Image 1: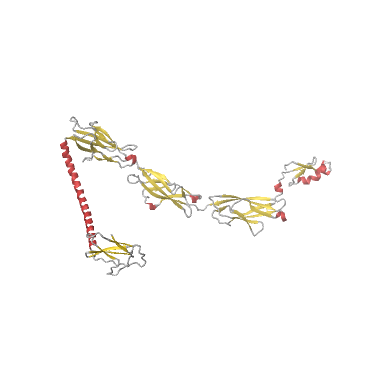
Image 2: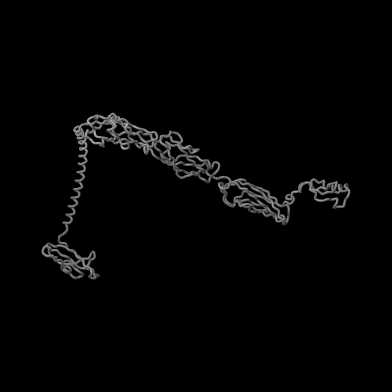
Length: 505
């Protein structure tokens, strides 16, 4: 109730009329400093002197924390005591009997102690700081009075970290692409790992595994994982490489994990075309070609040969005529570098022509080289003489090839001939007086016939009869089932068997 609230009239209830009498009778009661009510001396009204709190007037139990550990390690086992509390109630009997419990679903519980109304707060499950790092535990104590009165107490618990998590990379394998000709010493890429632990247990340092053998030209910043190359890479000598980065935390003991890094070097157009032909003795790209005056249109004069150490578009070469003495006589294939005649030569055409050829690659910033081809037009006889010299050189080379081919072919033929002779000798070494020894199978049913022909001297014999198994023998000299075949030169008759019957055809 609020202060000043009138709850009754004392003078009226007691039948008193004089104010002085009211003042005398209630002065002691209203003058008490702990009194909740007072009597108005003027009219006898009973009113609230100070605010009345029902919870304070009707308080039942009281919870007192006698011991508390505000911090619990996440590796604590179930049953670990974190706090001791005691509960008291000013009432007695049933009204003073107390029931206490934890109000939330948390990994903690109350365990009664040997002393009445004394409890231990213990862990009832495993803790994981990475899941929940802080708990507010509310303990409620209720007496058994009517109506029951309750009181609450809240405990604040922090879960401390242990180093139970390794640093983790986002992927097991990382891929980076680096353009060649990088600046030595500059950062080229970086790796990063995370750790779910806290404080020092989550502080990560990086290093390159020494067994990779790349520590001589790679360096990693241990604090942030930035990797720098100590040298400039050249695609033409190294196209890719692999190494491992290890991430370690600062816990005790330290935990670590690693990631495999694949680095692919990308090509830059840093190589100009190199002309292989024509090249003169002094190293300049210049050559001389002689062709007969009587060649027709489309005649292949020569081919400019070149290569580029770059790849892809950077190494794709294009040929073009920059200068030519007569545009009507020669054409250059843009992609192959072949030079051909556009028409036949006439008597009025010059005997010597100069072609300046540009060879360039297809890079973003194109690089190029030039070649000069001198073409001399000669009479057919002179051209033939020159071609004979070239042919002689070529013939010498062809003769060498032919010589080796002949040796190879002769060796193969000799081996083949020796093989044939050996086979013939093996056949001739067999005895001409061949006698087969077989014995009729006991279970023969007379439906099959088996025959073997052999020769003895000038006579030819056929052994006929039932089919025999391998390993069967026949007594030498026996004429059972043996036919003498007539010479085919004298008669066309021939014996055959059908079951056990022998017939002549």
